[in-house]
Length: 238
Image 1 (cartoon, rainbow, N blue to C red):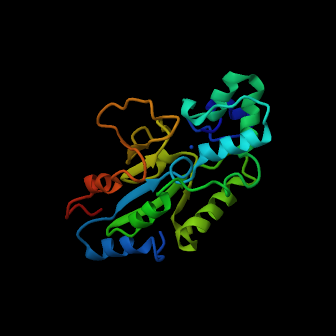
Image 2: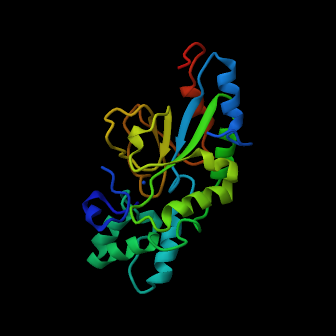
């Protein structure tokens, strides 16, 4: 959804090859290790396009700032990189797209996706479950990192700030599950520890996944079944 790797020299976009004991996060964490029979299931949840409505927020602000320019309706979005698809409409539109998410208040003003906040709060309260929001800030960092923290505090509360992981490379983060809308997640680690569950978004809904890859179609989908399928049996504590 951000600029693709070919635009790395611009310093913009996420061009990698998108724990505390608070009232929410602490419940699952507290119950797991104390039992001594199993380690907590660790779940990474992407932010933009999974929790926050990046695509809808972008389109709204793009049309407001550039009312006379062509735009791509959400149902016509294809491919993770927004700026790449806009660039095919016109060379100057790629930079105009980038300017939207580089602007102040873009990330903090994104709306939550339907059911996202409620689902992740429920997930964080499950026994033997650690949930982290794993998100990649853009390289033009003046506003983005701060606004991502502020967004989480606004929608999840200050106790969830301990559960944020900012990284440009998600492959090096150890977990059992990664729920993310980007179809191809690569990085320094060739064999990440997590299973990637593709969260359905406007730009990836047309993709056919090959087994054993699987989707979470929305937060109304049975995310608990996915977690249950990864739960570790007693005696596998690490």
